[in-house]
Image 1 (cartoon, helix red, strand yellow):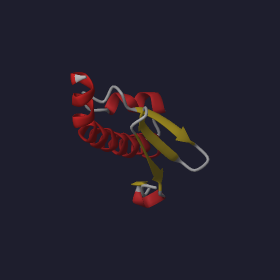
Image 2: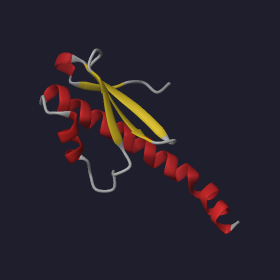
Image 3: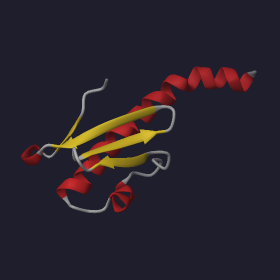
Length: 91
């Protein structure tokens, strides 16, 4: 009961951190992949400590990288040529 109450109380904070981490990972991952030309796997080594739950995936056809935290958040960034990588608007 106490654990459930704590989880409900902290959920907004967990969700906000997951959204921020996903957006950061998408932007950094996109720049690493499409500006620097590195592999997606090597891009995860650029993450800040504490981002172990964030994973990257890519869509090479649209040059888009998505950062996601399972069940909490997902954000994407698309390579836009000279403008670099831009976060896609949230749905």
